[in-house]
Image (tube, protein in one colour):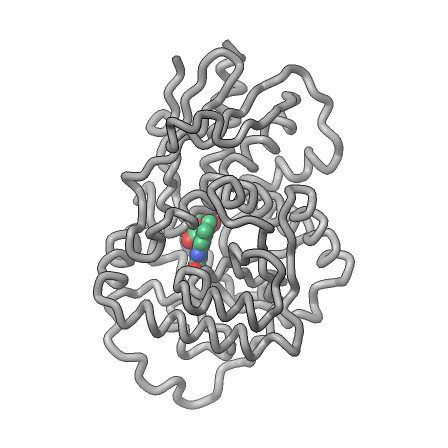
Length: 331
Ligand SMILES: Cc1cc2nc3c(=O)[nH]c(=O)nc-3n(C[C@H](O)[C@H](O)[C@H](O)COP(=O)(O)O)c2cc1C
């Protein structure tokens, strides 16, 4: 059996991963020199994620963070995805393969695990992100077998329209609002779900951004007037699409690992990010986005990445995690 402190350290870091609606849809079973990553379908979101794609992206991100944390703790790893075709909940085996001297990059990525968070406040314009940072983000994703497409000025209108269309489709569905209600508006001490304090008080419709963000207030009746008085500051953030060649559970787990490395690379470079997954949860807008951007392959996540506008942080609140003993079984 691997060192229990290492196992707990690795799993604790894995649970810091982003997950759709902070559902944390994972379980871990440690035995011998292996940490099994298991799906927890009891935490599924059947309305927005009927095929479990967002859920496996989330689990893949946890796996990615587990690998980086293990490296940072001086332990090498080897991953086997979907090792048991007869057991679909058995998503991966993380083999701990002995001592490993972490590189400076691995050390800084591991240190970023505790710092990374989803930022839903205002972002500086895309021009505030240096080209070398964009290159580093693309390489982080490529290292994990996925690709990153930057949404350029020619694509921006199509992406904005599709995000808004997906939000309209989802928000008009009472089942969507009910599912959202179950996982949002939580108090500061909730161990899962999205706390109210992690979401800006300004409704997405009143922001100065053409990219519509998910409205986490499931009970908002009416958008009302978009703004009164001074118009909001216009926002033109950097938007990227993370994608894969294939579109199956193995590809979703790979994309999740790429997402983990992408977000930690951004954090190390002083950037923040927020996923905008709605346009890819509605099949029609996902197909349009693939076509409009001429993507070769399958988009898995759309994200804003950039520098947070000073003083606009959404982070008066923090999305908590379940205690590690709730998700880790040591045999
Ligand atoms: C697959 C996936 C989809 C997500 N979609 C959205 C989204 O549409 N809007 C949003 O604000 N956050 C989105 N998130 C971010 C989660 O809400 C966030 O990771 C979770 O609440 C935990 O918070 P943290 O990232 O600050 O640790 C998504 C995350 C994942 C992994």
